[in-house]
Image (cartoon, rainbow, N blue to C red; front, side):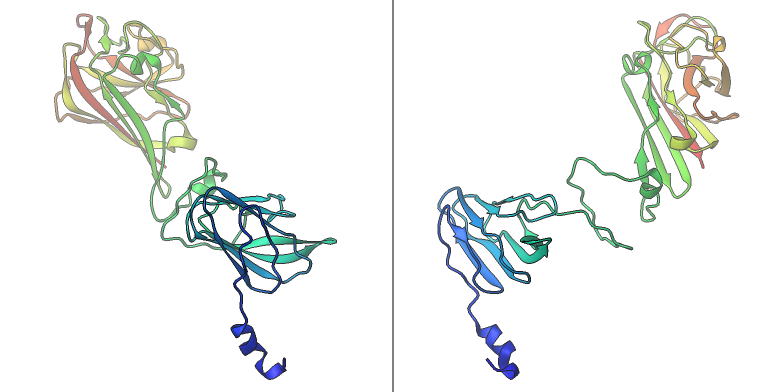
Length: 316
């Protein structure tokens, strides 16, 4: 083979290699070998360990009559994993042989559709149109996750509502959205099923007991709160319609006990609520404080049959 036509000869050289059949060995005898495998049922093949570096070999499931299990002698990654499954026609893996110490081994350079376990990699910058995470674990610092500049980061309260709320309220939901350095905390509560006591400042909650806070505010999760509102989108029915919002140090307040017995701060003295009422907070919860609803008037002990409130807090 002369130097002037070596590339042409390589191009014309045959690269397809015969499939030895179920249980057979795939032994590349040329560079850029391609093994088109046909299965009639669930079958296996073994890719033999290379004897020199620089060989490129591809295994493809050409005709799918059943899953193909390929055993790569010597392993195909740094963890020495050896088994790869091909499920569908067109699934393939391309390997390159390298020298590691005194041995020659295969490493994956490309694959599609198989169970190949690829190694971690790092890049200086990565731009993605769509990112789909299929694993069960994502490892990153909060700072790394929060520098997303193309959309919000979603979370929940550090400590969510106590059972004295969730055990009886018709519906309760909370969430935190971060865009840049701005945090928006939203709490939506349908108070149908909760109970108000018969004394002003009684905590509203499940009359069977349990911590009746709405969740905990923390600087790390919600930012430093600097604005907020209490909004009524369905009028309270049956219980006290004067519902106030408090923050307290303790998470132990229960229904029909006084919120003022806790280390508390009133955030919103709402007056009588009706559908459409929106009252700005006059004070803001500090970090680690728990939120409570409490009666603003002396009324009869009663269980609410309707009423939906939305609390919005803005932090930075």
